[in-house]
Length: 256
Image 1 (spheres, one colour):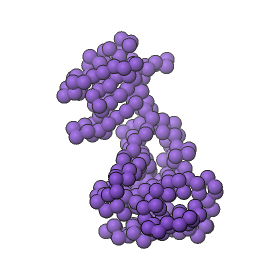
Image 2 (cartoon, one colour):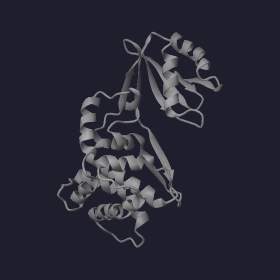
Image 3 (spheres, one colour):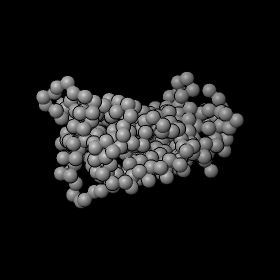
Image 4 (cartoon, helix red, strand yellow):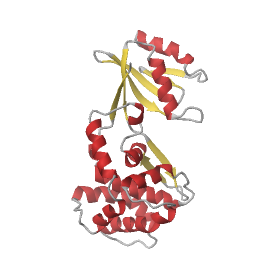
């Protein structure tokens, strides 16, 4: 372990004073169970954040802000990098696990990711922001109607993508399942969305951004339908913006 890593470890208690478990494993520095990072050198010293886990005391934003204050003590450290893999895992009443991308939820509701809000940017941030904001201003129900009516032509790649992501929901919302085509599965999930989504909305929502805002701020999962709606919405939006295929989730933040 290099000298800079040792200095950082010695400084950690000043910023995370209630966490007594600091470990080092193969150059990986761990602060309790909330942070893992590496000190790396590529012409300049930089920090590669490997994992951030919030808990009851430390929110994600508090962890980031505290880490940045810690690293600013060392002029040798020029920037922080991370790969955005932020996801949430939710169980329905049958104990099935659903995985949802936190970044995708934020893009849908605001046009930028959660990390973008804190100054962490991908190389294509400017282009991405324009692209995402143009899409989320479109009418949501017009868009899904266009998919059902085939005004928007889906290629094999899009159909397979939606089929894979919507099949778990289809199996839960259709009682008597028969062998059906991929398109029937996709259309069934979209029709479920069109029928059930309005019942959970207090105000009238029109744009994709409106739906994203509802999605981000709806925390009650006692009703499985809400969870299924979220998964259908995110699958459709992810397919539209090709988020899982072309998205650059590698971020950098330069330290002042």
